[in-house]
Image 1 (tube, rainbow, N blue to C red):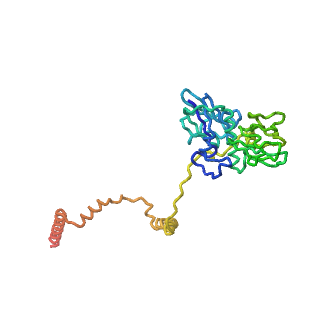
Image 2 (cartoon, rainbow, N blue to C red):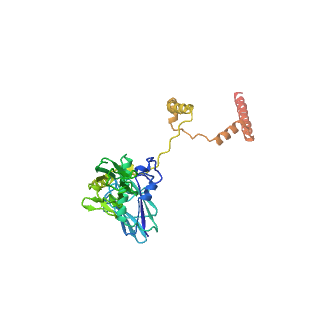
Image 3 (cartoon, rainbow, N blue to C red):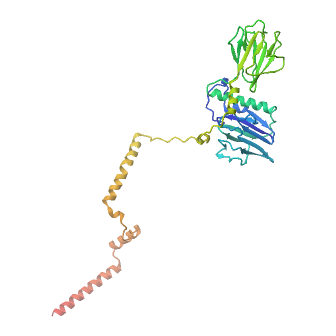
Length: 363
């Protein structure tokens, strides 16, 4: 069963708060994931920052070889390849080189980036290596956009009457260069056709196609025809009597990222913990005053009472009587029974006899 990898970037799905317009290469994580999606039907899929990975993740927190997804029978397992910042599934941090069974769909954090792994019947991506490069470039453009930079390809007129004019190439949309005023990049060149050449982005390079011009188009010694011709940064594109060049900041950043060492990220930044609930404040000033008085006066008062009655610290000789026992004692002291009367009469009789005997002795 094929496996689809959807790359969300550095924002967890469903938590986007970025108001940056899509014209700068940004969108919601869900929209980005639809564009940055690759489907494989292979026994092993490597995710990482390196160029040789099936899924390239251009972020310094991602190791060159970070995570492998492997088929094992009818299931997939995840294996962290000893990455610097680890791989997390929910609250579980994967142990290095220990397989973890994938439960599709699964949201996984690779370094600081979020990806979703889905097992399903979706057909494998055609031209996956080239598509993986396009996804990596798209992620680099989004990363630069968040820092306020435009990483998209920028075509500039170097020689000719329109020298200094520029235009940006947007992924998926052709840039038309020509003498027509409504061309995406207007060039003031009488030898140029109204719609002379079309430029598109393909991964980390541009491709050029001549639109049937009379004066022709060339890249160095190569003649550009009606089919796509690769145009690399640093080369001059000649359109009639006008020379063009381009810069591609995202492609340059991607190369630099692949050469950089891993960036160690503090663990607290890698755990996605829920925000703490706000503590409720006292409903009124009186409640806060009462709490303050209780805190400041309660302890001294208890201490003073304990000092005034040191007997409280001593063990009592007898256990204190229970309420029921106290009640029975009170009952016997207030209510006279027959036995009580008999005892009293006997005592009076003994006393009387003693008095009579004493009187007889005195005689």
